Image 1 (cartoon, helix red, strand yellow):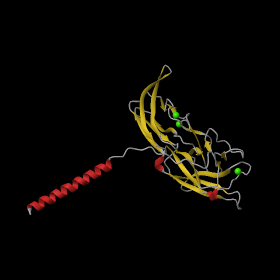
Image 2 (tube, rainbow, N blue to C red):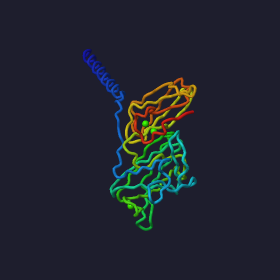
Image 3 (cartoon, rainbow, N blue to C red):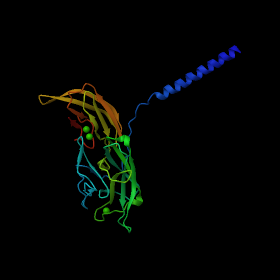
Image 4 (cartoon, helix red, strand yellow):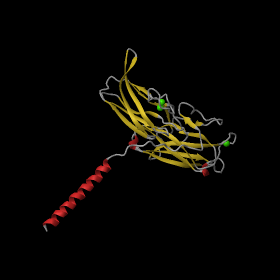
Length: 292
Ligand SMILES: [Ca+2]
Ligand SMILES: [Ca+2]
Ligand SMILES: [Ca+2]
């Protein structure tokens, strides 16, 4: 009797040890691995807000429908990244595709507040009466992504291409785009940074900066490729010369992720630079500096 009790106790102890071992293993995070977003193969078009966006003319890809009340808004800056909002119903864009096959492209957006909203994209059929717009994307912009940049994949079926411009080579597809709240009212708090195929590069930028004794910086990657060993410097200015106060390195920043850095005792800092020596090739190089 005594020895069987002892055995039971031993068995329970062993069991608990195994459980503890398992849960300890589960708590250990595997090292992050570099991941990429799939590169679009059927279009090389890229509409980069502030660079080549305005305006679609029937001879080139780009945006159409400038109207701050019900279309594309003016260019705004999220730190140094150029963006525009898109309200119902006038905003749209044209991209060129090579072939009539199932395809996809990307939209990079910044979510400016924490109310739930939806991004809509429709494709234009100018070939079949009554010449309709068909919805191809309804993407929820989640409240917990407030003050963040993110990349959204847009799929388009081969049946939804209509080549809206016969005069140009390739398939010019016209899309409408707008952001609305859950009741369908247009909002100006979803800001678009680019549309199309951004190429096989990362794109590093500021999503959030909070100046103070503890300087908090959120850095996002809205490119299709991971960025490794991203240097971030903070500076003060003495006699007009920038002095590096501190440096931090992000070992890995995958596409569609944001990482927060905290610089302590940073009251003197007046400027932050991502990739200050430009060792990482990006989609936009001009948006990597911000200041007080
Ligand atoms: Ca064409
Ligand atoms: Ca950049
Ligand atoms: Ca760079």
